[in-house]
Image (tube, rainbow, N blue to C red; front, side):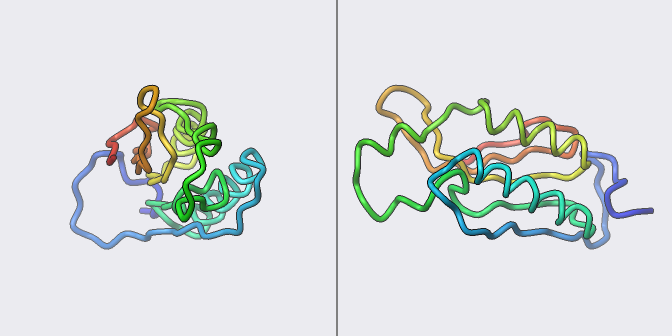
Amino acid sequence: MPANSVKPGALRDSAFRIGLVQMSCSTDSEANLTKCIAGIREAARRGAEIVCTEELFRSQYFCREEDARLFALAETIPGPTTEVLASLAKELRVAIVASLFEKRAQGLYHNTAVTIDADGTVAGIYR
C-alpha cells in the first residue's frame, strides 16, 4: 500500500515518514506561504505522511524582539492559513503540523501549533 493511502484516523503498527519544511522567510507573508506549500508538496511527493512546518513560517522569526507592530501578523485559527493548509492536506492526503502566530482575542496572542489531519480537519491545537 502506498505511504499516502492510509485511511485518516486508522491505527497502524508500521513506520511512517515525516517531512520537515525548513526555508528562508521574507517579510512577504504570501510569498512565505507559497514557498511553504511547495515544500509540503515536495515532502508528500517523497512519501511523507506527516509534514511539519518551521516555527512561525508566515514571517521572518520575530520573537527575539518586542515590537507591538508585529501583532498585525497574527491571525485567527481557523483562519486564512489553516483553510489553505486544510485544503492542501486533504488534496495530498497528508497530516500537517504548522506553527502560526495566533490571535485568539484582542490582546491574547500565541505561538500556536495546529495539527491538520489528512482529511483536512483540524485535529488539534497546542497553544
